[in-house]
Length: 158
Image 1 (spheres, helix red, strand yellow):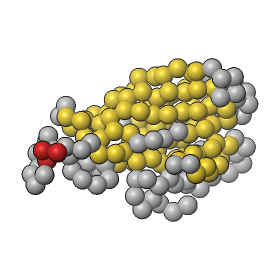
Image 2 (tube, helix red, strand yellow):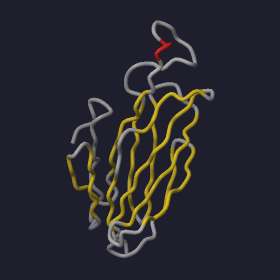
Image 3 (cartoon, rainbow, N blue to C red):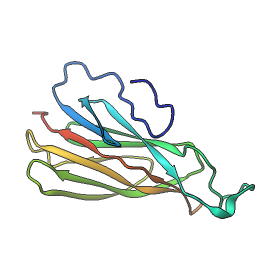
């Protein structure tokens, strides 16, 4: 796929050669299979501010695309990276993992910063679902929230 025209599209970079792990990228009802090391990219949604019309300040939200979330799953871990296009100096949220094979919740890890790693339980041939939720802030004022995202990963790295 080509690079996204806007934040509501997903992209998949060149697959990692020789990989046998597969991931299901599901966005707005469209499913795409990703190979080991490929990434899914999700948009950050701006936070509406009705008082922001016609002025620029740290308390205003600027219209348009606010950034992209890249989620990559490999070696039993989810890696996320957030590239902001609107003012932001902080990200706070949670990364939730569910083991879809067993049906057990894998828990939710509190995350902060624009990149990080969260580990699955690394059970052979288990399918995991990972979701990042949270918001970005600029000088303490919320500027964006995560959009819908969910990355399915099958752990076969043994």
